[in-house]
Length: 75
Length: 473
Image (cartoon, rainbow over all chains, first blue to last red; front, side, top):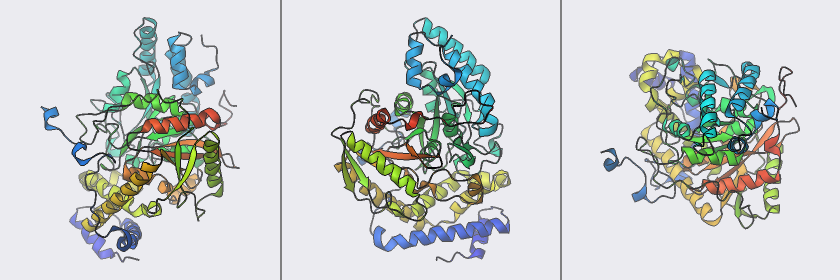
């Protein structure tokens, strides 16, 4: 299980100017630990060296044809 | 006067109503009145609608009646009611997102898809209930049960669109789907709902949860009706930078081509594997549906999607990181007005690292490759929609199981996918079948689903609502 430090969660939320109760901070910490652990478990097997998709486009569409704002259309 | 009971009108398909409007056998006014009657009888129980557009819907129905009579019909959807999820902007009609922070928000314009449906002559019947911002609780406007068992949850987040359709409170509806929010409630309520290809339907005017995973799509009781509605709402939109330029297909032309000669991919891993939390009755119904399609002439081909069971953390990281990005300022200034579930989930998104977001994006890329590879060899992929039937509302309150088990993959990949009913459990709860296809090949999904619905009657069954329902059957 990935250890998500409760003090780190508190500090990060404070940095973001987010105010929550201690109970909610604890619930969020537990959920983060679960998801981060699941993510770590698939890392070495599957994702090493894979180029990530940041700008999602319709699958199967060549990059050049992927949609996006067309300045011509906005004129 | 119509020669059918008001319940039959409320449950009639858009396609059948359209044919009757054209021959003037029936008026849109009759249909809207029948739906309003059922809304009056059942909305307190089902909480399907947040806002009912009673006067404007009746006025629009009268206008449609006279337009059609005067030969000015706009097309097959003219005079057909549509109910829209309450995260989609509707000009002059309150759009809450089921949030205190938008409690009195009245948009000055329609979402692009709503505008297109109105241009096609559809009548806005009302705004349907949703979980808060499509990811939280139903704490302001009531819990939405499935009409098949009022102690069980409808599923979300397009909750009111789904339970309203199942109960005959709307003819067609609009939902949105970020991890399964059209398909999951469709499965729990026994109706038909499509998440189109990413980019197929504009998202301008839809409250954002996750910019890379949100989709807008049609919900109805038949695949044919979904095809009709998608045809009117799809297409490129200059106001949505992610909308696609691909031409919109004629979704009706191939509807009756049947499944003979088609190859359907059956991913045994994950989707058809017995496992903890996967109801055997769901698997049995999906297996039976697949066999039915084979009997109708489809060829079944086992396919391999090894990442299918590993998508949950990637989906969670992407959705919640993006949701926090969207809601950050509002959470800082009005966070105490959010319900606890939405607040916790979104705030959690602030605490994933860039490395984790990158890894989730890598998982998405690998998954897209997998799905694309499989779809080069088959026409469609068929799976159960959900691992379980509708569960008790108390379970939803306490902390629900993973309902996106079968659906999130096609949000990550962007491929189109539909849920349609394929059976019932021994307790009388509907079971959903999911059909996915190549990007922008929604026509293939409609073809397979329509063929299945011509051969089965699961989609025609109606729940038995409480005794106050004059149309109980």
